[in-house]
Length: 260
Image 1: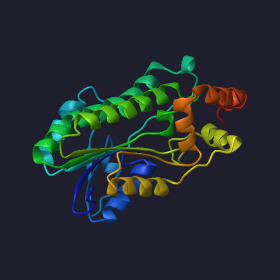
Image 2: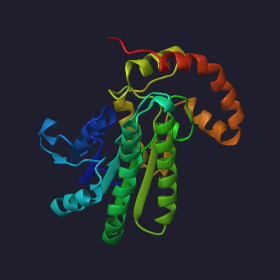
Image 3: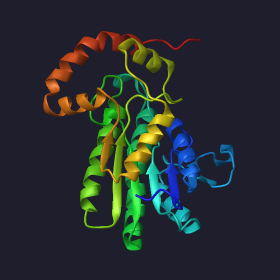
């Protein structure tokens, strides 16, 4: 995949991974259209174009039409938008559930539905989706988040096979825990207690760009997380037992009251 002199649409460009991706793509000589519900908060600089888009909106499909009418030269889409809520399913509000379903999964499906036929007609174009290790391994406290990321992984796999005889490339990258503002302190504390390694957004962005340059279909980040993904797919009971041992510790942070 060529990564220079391109016009990329970046969905989720205001988060930690998104900002790192925007910076790296900019250095490669690309133009990046960064969407946000608050584009006025995005620093204006050469090569960065802030644009309004609400990924959770009911009329997202119509918003995408207007977006491409204004920017018809978009030839690559990177979806790294994400919503998360570290909480037990029973105490999660419907709004919290909807936010994760709409932003993490529905917006990705609608973006692909909109751009795939346009890229196919143009004879080139790339669709890149940033998932998660939790798109392959279910983890307590992340039921809704895992559902959306499992869905995203399955969607990209099916889409890639559906477009296999076209010039449209579909790439899926699954990071492990990443140090971003999306994580509340309880999650950071849990990762420390479990001894989980946490990547910097810049490292994740570099891995995503490497996967894009190498035309990889999918890439899972981190060790031993990549191994756990394989084990969970073949022998899930082994992972079940390991997580059962961790469950009391997870519950301690899951039920922790935020500091006042």
